[in-house]
Image (cartoon, rainbow, N blue to C red; front, top):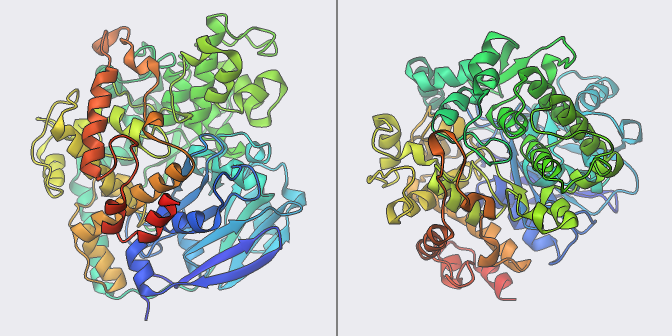
Length: 635
C-alpha cells in the first residue's frame, strides 16, 4: 500500500482534449520523490529537442511530492517545469499556498500538459475525476477574478485555483502561474507557457488524503516545528517582518542592489524596509496549508496606489526590484507594483529588474522618449515605473512590446550599450543578492541550470565565522565544518555551494519550503528530513539517500540544457557584476571573471561533470541511477 502518494499522474493532451492517468510503482517514487524530478522525467521523455517554448511541443508540468498534504509546516508546495520562454533553458519555479495540498487531495501527485487547446480552457479536478471546461469567459481576467468566477461557477468556495493572468495570455516572457491570488510560480516565465497552450487555469478540490505510514511520527515533526518557532527569534522575525526584514541588513553590508546593480546601497532603504511596512501598510499575515510560521504579508493602501489585502504584500525580492533597483522610495508604490504583478501574473524579480534596466538605458540615452511612448522613465519615478509595468503586462505600445520580451531580448534589439547594462544569466534577471559581497551567489548564479537564482543554494552569510551556532551547526550536519568569509571563493566555499545546492534541490524535489527547512530560517535541521520522509512513506531513507535525490534534480536539469545545446559558455555572469560597485560598504568591490572561472573548474570536478563542457558525465549519471538520461545525452 502506498503512503503519502496516490501513484497517479494526470496527463492532459490539450490538442486532443484527452485526459489519461499514468501509474508508477514505489521504486519510481522513491527514486524521484516529486517536484522537478517528476517534471523532468516527463519533459525529457515527451518534449522533442528544439521545441519552441511557446509552441505546442513544449511540455508543462505541475508536480507535488510524496510529502505534499501531510500535516506539518512547509510541505504545501507545487513545482512547475517546462522549457523557459525567457531563457530557452529548463524552466523551474515553486509556489506555496493551499493549492498544492488540495491537488493532492483531489487524487493526483501531479499534472502533465501536452499540446495546445484550440480555444481557452481550464482543467477541473475533483476526487479522482478530471475534465476540460471552456474558459473563453475567463480570458483576460486577473488572478483574483479568475479564482472568484471559477468558485462561483462550480459552486464551491473551497476550490483552489492556479492560473495565468493577462500577462501570460499575452506571452510576456516573465509571466507567472498564480494561486491563492498572491502565491506565484514566478521565475522563468511559465505563465507564458500556460497562456501559449490556451490553458487559463487549473481548479482542484478533493477529500482523498493518502494515508501516512506513521501518524505519530508525522505529529512529532509537526510539534517539533511549532515548538521551535516559539524559541527561535529569527523565525519570529520572519513571521513579524517577512523576508523584507532583511532590507536594512542588506543595505548595511552594501548588498542591496540599487539603480540596476550600480550600487549596493540605497539612501532610502529605511523607507522600503520590512520595519516600515509593519508600521504602516501591513494589516495581517497569511500562511500556507498547515504551516505555523505565517510569513506572508497582507497590506492595504487607500491612496493613489490603492492595494487590497487579497493580493498580498511585497516580500524582500519585490521590495528590492521595485524599490532599490528602480530607486523608488515610496513603499505604497512598491506595494502597488507587487499587487499588479500578482493580479496580472508576472514574476516580480524579472519585471522589476527589466524596468530598472530600461531606466538606466533611458537615462543613458540608449532608449528614447519615443521608444518609451512618452514615459519619462527615470530612476526614482514611481509613476513612470508603474506605467512601464502596466505596459509590460499588456504588451501595450512600443515600450510594452519591448519589456515583455525580458531585458536580454530587449537589449539585443537595442545594441551593445544596452547589453552592457544587463544583469542576466542565461537570459534570466538576477535577484536581489549581490555576488560581489556574497561570492557563492556568483558561482550559483553562473552554474544554476535555469539562470540566476537566490534559492538554489544557501547564502555565504550562513557559513562564516560569527554566523551563529545555529546555522553553523545546521551546516555541519551536511559535512560543512570549515566556515570562510562571505567574499571567499576557494575550495571550501565551492564545496559549500555544491552541497547546499543538493540540499536545496532536495527541497524542490520533495517540495519543502526553504524558510522552514534551510540554514538561515530554520524550524528543522537536515536530520528531520529523513525523519519526516520515513514517517509519511514508511521507507528507511537517510540524509545521504535524500541528498542523491537532490543531485538527481540538478543533473536532470543539466541534461535538458545540454540536449538543447547549452555548455560551460552559458555558465557566466554579466559584465556588470565584474565592475566595481559605487558607494556604501561595498564601494569598489567586484568579483573577477578569473575568480568565477576558477570556481567553476572546482565545482564541475566536485559535481562529477566534464570541466570543458560543464555538463554531466556518463559515469555521474549512472551513479545517480539515471542511465536513461545518460543515453539521451549521448544521442
